[in-house]
Image 1 (cartoon, rainbow, N blue to C red):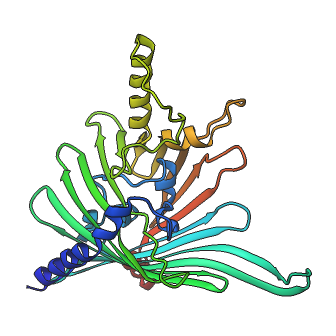
Image 2 (cartoon, one colour):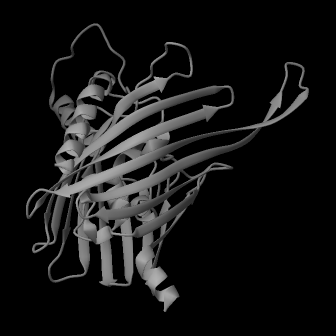
Image 3 (cartoon, rainbow, N blue to C red):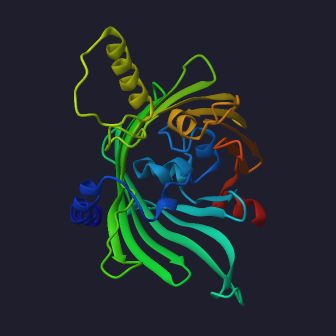
Length: 352
């Protein structure tokens, strides 16, 4: 009965908030919600992938992956971003016998400190800016292979004298086949709206997004292949490259080839591909390729690894450590560190 009430509440929130983002389709506020929450996520291109394991960090992205296998798991994440900017995440999972499995998360970003001066350059001190979100996730298994889940997000943003608060939900569904080591998920992300605005009456859209992901671990090799399709709510993610003219040129063989190339380019702007190498239960390596990031951030005159990302995971005793590095631009590549452990197991060892 209680699970039914929770599900109905989630569906009600979804119905209330879905109109605003679907109309706007592009986000302008609370963009920090799209930052990768874990080192593994950074290493595989910036988005989560569904898998058949018990990684709470992937369940933070796809709440339909939340399960009792993550009971009492705690994850801590920290990223030294660019310049003085840093962000992080702390999350914990708990399963209740009658209510189901939940996650609680705090996500923040600090933009550093700034000098405040008046119109003549007089020093007035310093101020800081940052954003944060408190997130509760819930997941439930419907059958042997199908799962559903949702996140509820309470969001705050503070930029000097300007502040804003908002609310949003994520809704996702997953198909998980443990026998075939295959998983697929779809996510409707950041369905919501501002409650208070930076400027009076100026209601700005949230970064709504539709994401779908699949992963397959090979049965006879320690390898997992994955693919993610992001921003499915909008087809063309490329910049405007053509100036409109007053006439339609005749179609030629070259123009048809250009059309095929444009179609392939626009399709690939949605795609992230990668591979995970899992030689043992205690060691893993991750590589991802984000086509859109490379096309937008590369420098034509220099060969670089912009758009590629990599990382590794290492389990020592009760603790899992992960490192992720993503190449955004020649100017720098942020480092992401994650620590994951089972609180119950650690406390048990401490008592003994």
